[in-house]
Amino acid sequence: MAFSGRLLFPFLTVLALTPCWADEPSLAIVQAGVQASDDAPFASPAYQFYPGDFLFFTFDVAGFTVKSNPDNDTRRISLKYTITPEDSNSVALAPPATGAIQAELNPEDKNWTPKRRANFHLPSFVAAGEYHVHAVVEDQFGKTQIAKDYPFRIGGIAIRPSPSLSVENFRFFRNPDDRQPLEVPAYSPGDKIYAKFDMVGYKFGQDNQYHVAYGLLVTRPDGKPFIRQPNAANLTDTSFYPAQFVPGVLELTTPPNSERGAYIIILSVRDLIGNQTYEIKQSFSIEQ
Image (tube, rainbow, N blue to C red; front, side, top):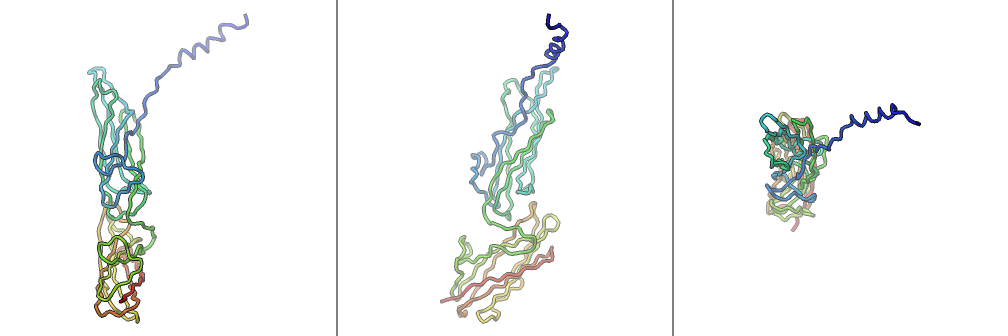
């Protein structure tokens, strides 16, 4: 006999102690995405939300643990979730939506998945760019957690982050409600001159408070003062999300007998929290 039975015994013992378990489902966030309105289809990757819009988010949860109680023949689940819209640095754009999903399941609920909705008001002064909704679900019975990000785009004003006070996107308009700025800022005597710009790089106080002010001097073609507004605006506010920019507006009235030629706006901006100042010059012309 070439082999003894003793050589086979350990091998048979290992087989007897190795159970065969079926794969258990993993906690998952499914059927999830951002929407432009409640119950709308999921927004496409090209869709753009805008500052001040409402953003809606819908999701289901699957793969959760079901806790059975043989004494009273009940089956229960216990989940918690946190949904937060965030910028690229994972700073929350709005307060998170939180909640719990605690339910007792019936036998016919074998394939049931709980659905939840959340909506958020996007900040008014947030720049165009890529953002995401950060979703976290915790299975309290299964002691597991899952987190996923769902991207979305915000359109509007493009901003270059600045470490210090600065002015960006200065542009002239013919009328206050125009969307398209003038390529050549040329006006006639007696016209109103409209301009818009964005202030960035200011410092924040408590509760994300900003406090900026600006004034201006407009010089004639000969360099002499034409219009003075040393205290054109004083802007301050607080917000949940730190404002990425603060918009400024200028409205200047030219007399009917204004001299023809090139004029210069000297805009002076002050950051009253960060104790910073910034000055920018922009030119326009008055023609026939």
